[in-house]
Amino acid sequence: MQDTISHSLQDLKRQSGKIIITTHHKPDGDAMGSSLGLYHYLKAAGIESKVITPTDYADFLHWLPANESVLIYQEQKELCQGYIKDAAYIFCLDFNALGRINEMGENVATSTAKKVMIDHHQDPQDFDDERYIEIGASSTCELIINYVKKHLDISFMTKEMGECIYTGLITDTGSFRYGSTTSNTIRTAADLMDLGVVPAKIYNNLFDQNRLDRLQLLGYFLANKIELIEDGTVALAHLTEDELAQYNVVTGDTEGFVNYGLGIKGVQLSALIIDRGYLVKMSFRSTDVFPCNEFSAKYFNGGGHKNAAGGASEEGLKKTIEKFKESIKNYRQHLG
Image (cartoon, rainbow, N blue to C red):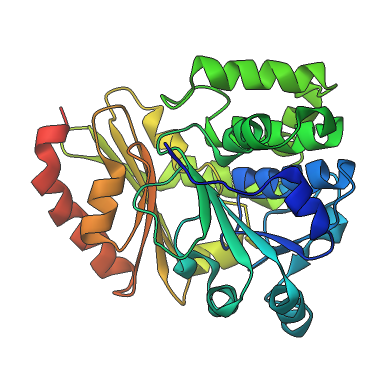
């Protein structure tokens, strides 16, 4: 745990209208849940803030309360740059390196605002002024609740905040199935229900609003794209740029695909490699033993958590697959 928070709720109130909340590119449920969750908390406390994301994000997150207020830097650069320039506080949620917010990172780096990092990933960079970090915590959303309880005032927590935070809890824990889920995670979820959060509503909004194209892609993926290597301990899947185009893939459509490999008996590591055209993106998920973050950082310019990490390659799809198959041989001691 690293806790260097020095501001109070009164400090934030004095800077109302000059507070930015941002998160990593292509934000997931934890990123958007923590960002909008903090936004709703501050709003209830009478503090005006603005959520800015570096890029767009999946449609299944657009139902989140106040989603319509979010600014996307990629689409409104000048407006966003103005907000960042005038900011007194910039909350950096669910990321710990400026490279994770793309070109927006340059604006944040040069801003005179106090940067407040709240995150649960390893190896944070030193660009922040204050931080609340717990490596291995279930989610940034859980840390937002801990931060509010320890440093602010829980009386301003609302149902709208709770819906956002609950979203991050279940997406980053695989609906409370991952090893990062603790008793505190479950207690946090219970507290959110006491605020009026209805879990069935959250699950329906996140998982039961699929486009037909996505379901057809999933069927094709499960039937044709998963292969077992390393004596059945590794599930490797890939999607080509043409296949993405064939199924009209949009942001978020392949979310969760990598998890299906771990559902195969005997598999301890699941890898998904996707050719995005401009870059080959990779996702890794594992059981307790295999260190996804270490493997990804060593071979694929990535990182994340022990059992969930991501990476990238500029070598093209074919060479990236070949490199993965060779590299995994060096980690056989973590398999089988």
